[in-house]
Length: 370
Ligand SMILES: NC(=O)CC[C@H](N)C(=O)O
Image 1: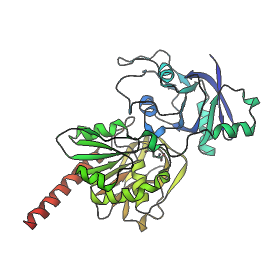
Image 2: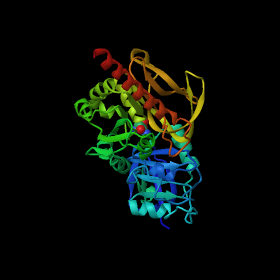
Image 3: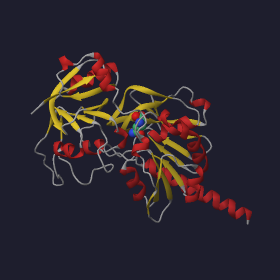
Image 4: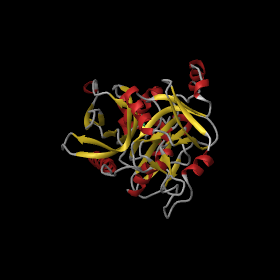
């Protein structure tokens, strides 16, 4: 098997064996600590343009199946694993990770010292990397810089968002799902609660949402820097002021920014299935699924109409917000899980409840006028 290398922006080189598509790649090198869920992670549009390093030492052991996709394609730019299992064992398995990467056109490396690679990212922060077969001793700084400049930019949302509205019919509350790169599990969670869902492009305006007469709006997860979507902030603010709103991950960051909060890039982000968050109202700690590289800053929240609902137990970063007057709630973590624990699935219930309360409130107002 051909040798391959991941060459980091810092000049560090990690060696491995080539797997997947026979084609070089560049992207931001991030790591995920989940023990399982590699298929969901690689198909999550939030990873568009990133090279995902799996911390868990054995990946691919239950193969790739037809049910765990979070979207219709693999979005990660590359994959790095310590050991890749070539003989998966699972009743649903339809192939190996390697085969799947080849078909999807995604390159990867196996046999990499992922512990050292992750330690380096933890120390120096996320950096860009280049997966290549070029012998590292022939690469000079200018060549590396030129290659890394090919990495996709921080605004991948227009590439992953739907272009046309898509409706999923059901009998319950009607939710507009603003698609910044939504995970299928978010749609599935809404459908499981009986919601009718209209998936709308990321740049939908208040007028367009109003025409659909929804009961609520959900702003999805998605790739890149939330500040790259600055021109949408005014629309996001208008939409969220008009309907009960839930923001998840990128959706949370966008809502916070739309109301005047600030975000920053984290040193190496939160990506994994066991991030503890504390609900401030109850003091309860819950395990959450996470995947983000940016974070809403606590400083400055008091100048916005939001209060903080959740904090990360490990680093005290903001994990959730609630508008003080309007039915707007946001979470940085992923209540839909996939992969990871579903301890916070109740967030969807609370959103349904907010839509029901709003229907009641509007009903009472109509009754009072009559
Ligand atoms: N999963 C997400 O929505 C990620 C949000 C954003 N792209 C970040 O990395 O912080």
